[in-house]
Amino acid sequence: MLAAWLRRKPAAAAEAELLRAGIPAAALANARDLVNCNHLKERGFWEPYGAGTLPGLPWQANFGQISAPAPELGADTQTVLREVLDLSSTDIAALHRSGAIE
Image (cartoon, rainbow, N blue to C red; front, side):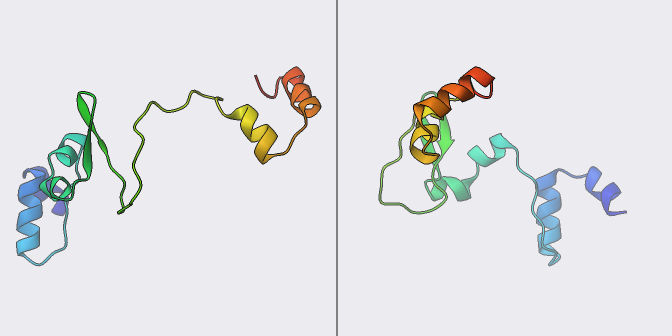
């Protein structure tokens, strides 16, 4: 019954009606809904980036954010192998030869 009732109503209208009746409810939001959400706007969640916006940090921070393209696939592989896994150049070369990494 609930599904049939919900199908006939816009999500925001169903949410409002359920909330008025004391039933916890929230309409699912798509990306456009989130960008236009006053709650998020008032809290400065969205930050301008290029021609659009990107989400900010979900917490308060006293350091600046860097907005840049994501690293390319495998861009940090050598650093991780050397500095995190402490592999030698010989071990890394063996991984390359075996095809485990490119």
